[in-house]
Length: 416
Image (tube, rainbow, N blue to C red):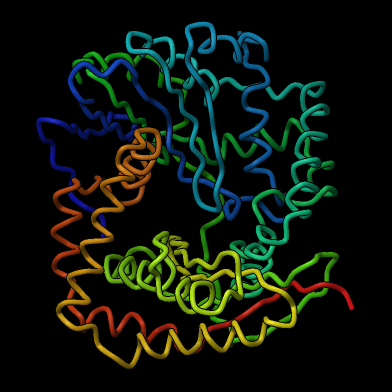
């Protein structure tokens, strides 16, 4: 569910008359670096039919020229003061943001809104960037440990826009035109579909006035096809043979979307099974005790209307079946044996500690706060996150684990 935005001494939320939401957060005293950007509620699932990869292509080419700037001027605008301009695309959102020395907020905000409202997508620049994106696609396909996740989602979200990978294909990218890019911008980069975020020590009122001035060119409302939840598919076990030296496998189960999932219980289950700690159950079972894998990990992928818990491992092909059975054993063990009070307390302590370490990465914290605002109206404070993790019971962990006992699996294995 959406959170009602609550302004605090550190964080301010408000909505401009246009519908653009704004989040400002005070940085630690004396901070010499600021962050600002736009979180866009649009990704690869929002592409029109036949335009696979367009959201990502727009993210690349939005930097290639506006009505008043050429590509070089865009690149140089923040780098000239030691800052960075960056962006990324997922299946449901796009982030365009800048990190820069304190004191250059207006420069960064004006540039970001210029990109979002005035990008021209010149044909000459698109032709060059097509080659860059096609090289990125080829590079990605050369990494089975990465490609297997896309292949898995293609099957588990079959017959939906979530099934398509973010990059598209060489063929779809080569068909994209300047008109396609402008259409995607017009369809999705509207005031009511965006969150502007700022983290620094400027007065929130100064931020408001600056944003109001530069956001005037934004369309007011999105004009795109409605998102449709992917149909549920039966559990599957599939194998694809590729040129590789090892088997790369994803085992995963579909779960409810972000507004329904018990996300703190899910975070605990994920961390217990295959979190970053060497003491995760899967790492102990497959690597520490038996030496079957170099790495095994679990991760969660949470979309608005569907989620996944996905377990990845890479191993020698002859060990693949054994690894699969060991993972199923660990899933069954977690689903059939409630955690003791001591085990649950230890799991919570580890997860909270890992989140505390993660909060030291200010760039990622800025982006995660913006994303939470985009989807939930406001971000939980670190204290609220800790309270919600501490409130998770062993029964909730058990119920979440029981959702994982009929997983699907996909292996990319060497050609025979």
